[in-house]
Length: 208
Image (tube, rainbow, N blue to C red; front, side, top):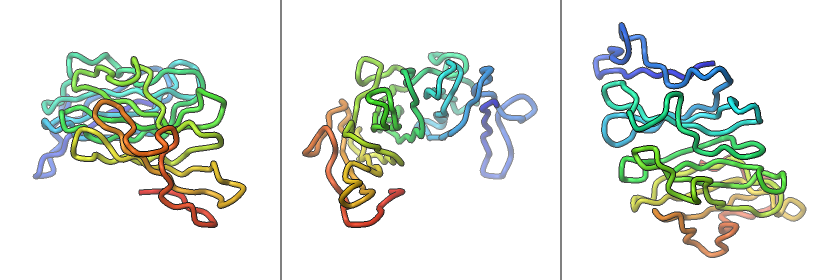
């Protein structure tokens, strides 16, 4: 599978690539899936995807395409690695950071074998800004945290939410939330696990 992209004019014309056939984003000889697209605030966009080129269950890569359809020269061919760790890094989501970069959220089982919530911020150049390049844990409570969602807070950070199984024996699936600032600091109480948005009995899932 190969990741590619088009730009469509207001008149419905395809305007990127040779003969307007689109531009390749990643042609690595591996599986790329779970693709996300995000405007960069400067007429171009970021592509974000899951990637199995390293032979494991999945890592996360991204690439910036400028408004002329060309790859940002500061980024690598076939994308920059956002997170390449043992285990699975999947279900990535992203939002703008207000400075032509982006914040990425995903689920990650590198610690303890259960899925936790991790995040990373990227500069427009592709530089990884949080956690010495490995990302930062947003929630690493026991049991599973899944279905991550993210939106900008308008101040360089983001609001993060997810389905959480830590109270499975009591209330089943719950929804938790956290806010992160532009420097990667977790802002709300219970910083290592977020705060409960809904812990009613029964299932709460798929936050939007």
